[in-house]
Structures are given as C-alpha cells and as structure tokens.
Image (cartoon, rainbow, N blue to C red; front, side):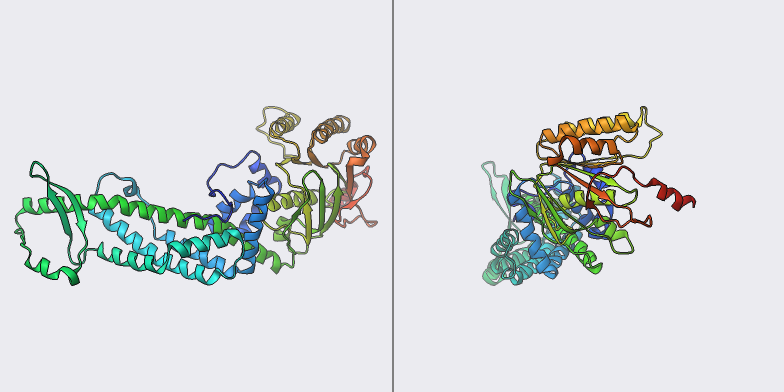
Length: 490
C-alpha cells in the first residue's frame, strides 16, 4: 500500500538532505518556535515539519494537492489524529534488528516475525475501521486514495485469513513437515504443512510415528535440523511481509506527522486569536504580493501580547525597500514575508486573514550576522561570500530577503554595493526585498527605478514611540537612533 498525502506521485523522505540555504532560512526567519508549536515533544513531527517547510514546492498543482489534504485535516482533525496514533502504536511494537537482514535462519527469527505480524494485524484492523468511517467525509485525492487502497487490500476476507494463518504459524499442535526423496535417496524439498485436524485427524492418528528418547541427542538434533530446513523457506516470506507493513506504517506516520503538526499549530494560533488562511497564488507571469492581517508567526507564538498586523499590496514591484525607525518592526515584517512564502509553498496556511503570493522557484535570506571572532577575514568579506553562494543558486523568479546587509562598511560604499546588487537581481527577474538604514541606497532606487520599486517604512510617532505598522511611504533619512539612546541612557 502507498501513502500519497504529501506528494501525488512520489513518496516522502523525511530524512532527505536539506537543500541549500535551509539552515539560514530556519535561523533568519526564526522558525524554531513554529517547529516547537507543531511538534510539542514529538520528534517525528518535528522531523517531518522541518523536512516539509524547508523544502518548498515549486509546482502549483503540487501545492494545491497538499492544500486540499490539509483542508480535510482541518475539517476532521480527530480522524487524522486517530490515524497518526495507530501508525505510532504499530511502529512502537516494531524494533527492527539485525535479524531482518540475516541470511542465517534461527527459530527465534520465525517466531519474532510471526509475533510482529500478529501485532500488525490488530493495527491494520483498527486502521481499516477508521478508514471505513472516514471515507464518506473526506474529499481530497490524497485521503480518498489512501482510504480506498486500505479498504480494498485490508478487507474482511484478508483479515480473517491472515489471522488464521498466523495462528497456524504458532504451531500450537506441533510442526508438520513435508519432504520427498531425491534421486540419491536423500530427503529434499522440505516444506511446512498446514494441519487441519477436522479433515485429517484420522490420517494423523493412524500415521506411523517415532519419538526419540530424551537422551538420543543425535536424533533430536536431526529432527531440529529438518524442522529448521522446512522453516527456512517460510522465514524470508514472513520477514518480507513484516518489512513491507513496517514501511507502510512508517510512511503513514511520517506524512501524517506534518498534518498533525499543522493542526497543533493552528490550534495554538486560534487560542491566541490569530487568523490563518490558505493562500492563493497569482497567475504565472505576473507579480502580485497582497496581504491582509499578515503577522510574524514566531512572534505570535512567543510574545505575551498581540502582534501588530500588516497590510500590503505590491503589484509588479520586484524591488521592495523598507526603511524607518529602529525597532519599528522592519525585521519583523521581513520575517513575516519570508515565513508566509515558505509556509504557502509547503502547502500550509499562512498567518494572515487574506494572502495572495507569487510562486517562486527559491527563497533565500541574506541577514546581517553578529560579529564572529573566529572569522579569518572581515565582516564585509563574509557577507560577500554568502552573497556569492546565493547567486550561484538563483533562477529567475526567486525571492531574496536582505536584512541590514552590507552595513559593515561606510554609508557611501554600502549604498553603492546594495544598489549594484539590487539592480542586477531585478534585471535578472529576481524579486528582492531590502530592509536597510542606508538612505543613500533607498534614494538611488527611488531615483533610478521608481516604477518597479515599492518603498515602505516603519514610522516614529510624535512622542518617540513606535506603532510597529509598516506603511507605504518615501524612504526616511533617519532611523531615529537618538530615541533608543535616550530610552537606554536617559
């Protein structure tokens, strides 16, 4: 049986290596609180959440497929959590050891495989029951295909026959071995035979028998060898069956883990009165980024009070420049923008009341780093090396987020450098968002390409406080650093 809840045509690998820039996305966009809210104390959910969120989809149909599965999950959370619990219980009883791949037979391997399959049978029975009840309620392709496959392959006849076979394989009435004589009168073709006392009791009653004496070790060893030879042919069949069912439950657990994490994140945000929505994507070849009630999800999860939302509409604006007051919400806005893009292309909801986004082939961040004493060269060199690595991965349509980049040099050189980079990116079809204090850079952008640029700013109120509202407006020439000075030093 196949699980296709995250991808329509291929399996999901939670342990796959992360793509370039994934760690930077995680740290720059402060995703740790998101993973924590999704996973709680469950490492499986955390692993799946990281693997999905840090590998955004680039195909519209794939995203919509996942959104429909998520919509089913949000409509029927109890059923989804029940399916996840069944997969967890099934795998909890499976401690896959070296004996699975051993070519040497031992009676313990046979018994362990039978015991494992017996446990799996109970979980498959529970799984079928949930699928049967849920099938009329779910509408997404992912869930309906899963339910149909489970119901067709794990039907009543299968469960009954599997239970009878596993009961026979426990050999409560002893082991019956079949064999034949070969050309040289040696026994060969050892086979386990099923006993049916109701049909053949007289045959076994009248059959000649031999019971070795307890002290006849050679005879006992010979019988054990013949029993083992008969079992050997069946061991691989049992191990293969157990391995396939294990793989199925592991895939079910890993894929459901992401959606269970999404449900936990939604519940947490709902408890904070934070709205979420399934985003829409603008048509291919257009560039529209529109939000209502956009919030930084990490800040929502960690801040004790409400988070100020942002409204934005940027149409055909491949360059966005954000200036304004220190600690006025610029970096928070930048993170919220990156988070929304990442969550949307993971097939997840965004933390906003309405959201329309472009579909981008890559999301990259270039945030200012703290000074590292171990650096063998200057901070500017380190920033340029990171920029060079990002450029090698860029394709037209990608999104790059800059936060106070290239501020380690003076205003004139830093502004010139930022303008050269932003110009080259925009000319090559790369959507670029800059949070900066470099007024000269913002002024150059406004002078040279105002039609394709959008300027936002974090204002300062008359009393020196911050509203944390990001609004459209001309670049500000000051970051009001004096406010912070007076706040700290009086």
